[in-house]
Image (cartoon, rainbow, N blue to C red; front, top):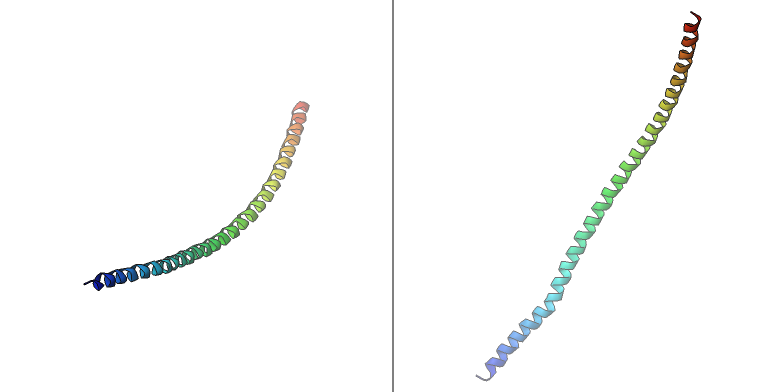
Length: 98
């Protein structure tokens, strides 16, 4: 009877030591899985970022084209306004002659 508790303590000790030695491996495995998942997320975000940068560049180019067109329209409006002012002046002189 004196040896049975030692055997039980030995078995319990072995189980505890085994659990302690397996624990870090399980944690390492979980950490590796988390790292792999984070790397996949990073890769996905990089692809998404690249697409957004391309869209931004396209929008910037479209904006530049629209700003150029707007500048042209402003020039036309200025010319038309000056022409209208000239026509009013001519009409005023014409009305004054009559």
